Length: 189
Image (tube, rainbow, N blue to C red; front, top):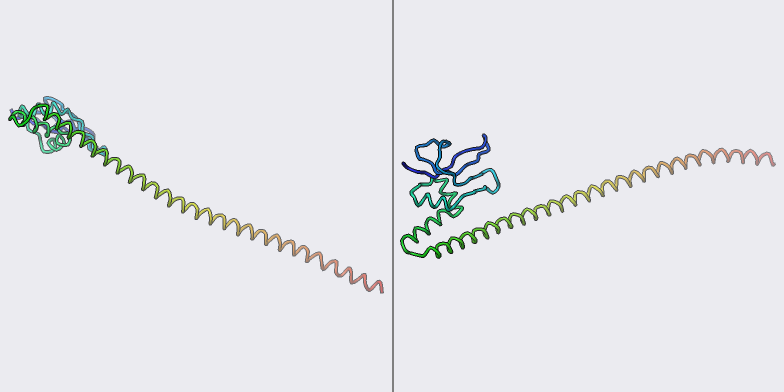
């Protein structure tokens, strides 16, 4: 019976979610399986892979063949490297402690690289946000200046209208007083 390590699709249409399982090669894709090794969620950013590395290595050492996608996922999590190192132990190329030390060094190095990528992405995002906020502040200042200028123009226009109205009122009152003074002057003569 050929045993395969492969993905079993779950989730709804357009939103896949996979279980990483050990199954008989003749069983249908989403059918009966022997053991569940982990999960894979490609919809998350970054994709989430949960895998029991020791179980995966145990099954590969017993002859299970991973599918291409399962192989790449196990490679990302280090199961393929651990399987390779344990084959080296079986051949006498290194001891189990050396193999475990190499695997742990690889895991820590990989975690540092991932953290570095996350930090770079976060710093780029923060820099982009600062640039957008600065551009938005400039636009806001320009709008505030335009509104202040418009208010000042409107206020000056209102002041001019008031001055015109006062001038008209004074002009209307002045001619009325001037003829009265002229009438009074001939009477005095």
